[in-house]
Each structure stands twice: as C-alpha cells, then as structure tokens.
Image (cartoon, rainbow, N blue to C red; front, side, top):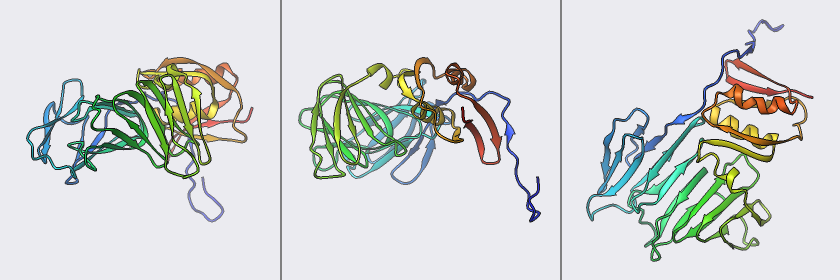
Length: 293
C-alpha cells in the first residue's frame, strides 16, 4: 500500500497459524551484570558469587545454596520473565517462589538485608511459599505496598497495567502495608482473604482461591471475569497484543482451560459469548483485535 506522500504502509495480515502457549523460561541477572538465559543453561551449577552457589536441576528449578559464611548481603540478583514465560526458584532460606509471565523479583543472594529482614522486590505476579523463621521477617515490596510475613503461602498480583494490587493469603498470616499513602492503614489478612489496593483504599474480600492460583497450577480459570481481565492474562501468556475497536465488551466469562492449550482453543471462550475478534500479524507483532458487537 502507498499513501499520498508515496511512503509505504505496512498492511496487517490475517494470522492463520495458531499461537503456541508460553513455556518455562526466564533470565537471571547476576550481581556483576551477567545475564543467564535459563532455558539455555545446562543442568548443574550455573553460577557462584559472593559465597552463594546457584544450580539448575533437570526440571529447570533454580536453587540457591550459601556455600560459606562470607556471603555478601548487598549482592543482588534479578529473576525476570518476559511475556510467554514462567519460572520457579528456591531461595537461600528455602522459600519457594513461582514467577508468572512478564514479572520479576530482585533479592539479595544471601537473603540478608537491613539486618535480619528477608526482602524481595516484586514487579508483576508471584506466588510465595515462605520458609518459617520467626526471627527474620520476609517482606515482599511492590511499587505501592509491602507484605510482611514470618512463614506462609500467598500470591501477589502487582502488574502495572492493572488498576489494583491483589494480595491473596492461602496459609498463615500476613500484614499488607500500603506505601502509596499514609492515609491508608495497614491490614492483617487471614487465610482465604484477598486485599485489593488502589490509589485511595485497601479493601478486604473473600478470595476466589481457585482462580487466583490457576496460573501457578497451569490453568486459566475464570469466574465471572471481565473481558479485560481475561485478555490481559492471554496477552501475557501468549505474548500477543490486544486491541479494542470501540467499547470493551461488558460480558462476563466463566470457565477453565489448560495454559498448555494453543491460543485458538482458549479464544473459543469469546466465541461462546458472541464476542467477535480477529487475529492479525503485522510488522509490530501478533495482535488480537476485539471488534464491536
């Protein structure tokens, strides 16, 4: 195609082939700036720095082991996933972390910071199974809040393109402390509760545990979810952009499917509620276009 000024216009093509689901992959950035692409790294010891040994097992699991007493408390690593990736790590204190797509955690390799605190900086979404240690609180910090625990299981969803940060407690107890405003008071959660934090309030609800943990369990599970919520999850897992032509449909979606399904199988949910869409492939990448009804 040519415009009147004779510049070439790239025409989007209908995407005919299916889109494969995401995979177990991540990038580990070491304290010295080196990057390790974990899907390519061989099994066994992949790095050693500041008295901490990092290994990868046959299932892709990353484990930290403090190899001597000279571990450097200020040596930090970042584990990050792109869209279409997920990963799991065991930290030096034996806490387990599952990282969802388009997410990252940054942490001291010895997990010793600010004295006896175990601190993690999270962007995106992660599920934590925290090893119990009453003398060393475990703190997960996002851009808007801190979650303080001693030993527990919980999920934090803190994607920047979502309007609220959702913290869901599975086991134990946690304190959610907002950091965006001194007018929003910290609250303590009991198992089965979810804290939703926005710019002006921190509200506590009964959690839909099945839906919250679906990603960790290899599933998409929706219970009266909005089209926007569903498409955000699809976009992150299949590494595909979403464009809305006109008003975003207000239909609600319920159901479930494996995250190992190809994209077209997942999009059948839209067809069942008569939402029209098309798949395109252009110079900027793959895209789902949601059309007016």
